[in-house]
Amino acid sequence: MFKSLKHLLLPLLFSILLTGCKDDLEEDVNNNNPDEGEFSVDIGDSEIPYITIDTRGVSIENEPKIIADMAIYDKKILSNTGIIGIEYRGSTSFRLSDKKSFGLESWDEGGNDINASYFGFPEEEDWILMGHVVNEKEGYIFDNTLMYHFLGYEISRNIGKYASRTKFVELELNGEYQGVYVFMEKLKRDKNRIDLSKLEPSEIEGEDITGGYILKIDKTSGGDLNLNEPLEYFLTNWDDDARYSENLGFRSNYDINGNIIDFPAFGEPYHENQYLETYFLYEYPDADDIADEQKTYIQDYINSFETALLTDNFDTEERTYTDYMDIGSFVDYFIINELCRNVDAFRLSTYLTKDKNSKLSMGPVWDMNIGYDHGDRVPIDNWVINYNQYVEKDAWMMPFWWPRLLEDPQFRAAVKSRWNSLRSDELSTAKLHLIVNETSNYLIKHGAIERNYNRWTIGVPVDYLGSIESLKDFLQTRAEWMDSEISNF
Image 1 (cartoon, rainbow, N blue to C red):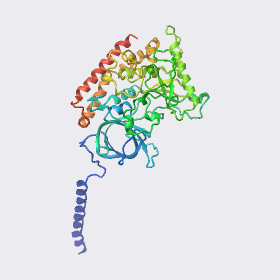
Image 2: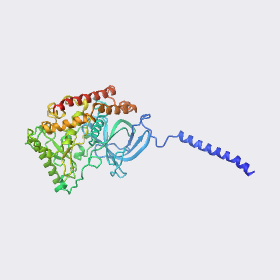
Image 3: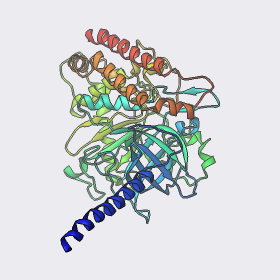
């Protein structure tokens, strides 16, 4: 009897368990995955990472950063969360663009910097969300393709030079869709970014004082000046772009034509002779940390390099300026920025480094949103370094270094050798076009271009495919022009 009862109960028990499991499965299917995001736009099956930032009801400022919560979704599934500090970034682009860029720091709840990794990038605390410039009122966009920054940095990495690691993302800020952004590393001294020796304030003599340094040829900004002003101030503070001081950096002893400057440094912004000046800003150690002895060392080093470059006789074989500069880095920096017709390069957003017991190096490349087929302040059939031939008395003109270097047969020979090698492989037209095609197809396939331009309009539709073809035509035409010019070096 017990055996018969067991035979009756077991199927019944199995049926009950199966029914219970089925109910649980149906409940799981019918409920949203708790890690699945709900966004302000429909991203469909997009594989482009989607970032949401919530500033906890506080308005973002130019300075300082405010606390916020950031979440990163991969195919709608939450993959990373964390606390960040966020602020607006950029000077000219901040004023001109309705689509703002942001500086980020990974924080703990107490607002302390902590290292974090995103998208597999090496751990660090400083990051950037870079938007492209869109001015809806005046109806212009700097980069219809959305890839100028990405492309320049990709080219740099492809030829073996460090450039900021980048990832295309879509951004939602406080519940409002902001479009396509490039998430990127901020340039700074770090073993995985600008790999230089650490320079302590106490290292003021001998080999210790020789590095590492990061200098920047650039505008000044609110961050440099430690300004504590309301956001409205930064919309119109053009003077602060040129407010140089002895604390922030130093001026070259030579003007843009290679002549000794005979008027005082650190004049009022946009004074009548500012176009003749080149300033070097202390990036690392920064203005607050660099020792007076270190300031003197790096200023004297730059002056010795410039003097040697100007006084060497290029009709002979002897060179002394190469005692101070790493010629390979100068060649690569020249090639990348000329190919991309980056009209801000050399005179703005220009990084220089010097490690311990090493020479002055150029780079990494940076800030490439005004160039390529839209860099028409310089014709497509001339060098960007000849900027001064086309622009008169800009507050930031081309330093004398580059035209002078192209006068040297030895420097031209180094450019020719490197260019010919790169054109046979990494910088072939086919490979340049491949980067553009793969990038644009990725953004189009996942609907990001449509979503971005639904969000950002300038009164007329953006012909994205036409912009891609224009960029490819430019790269081919520019590279072929450089072929012709460099063949005569």
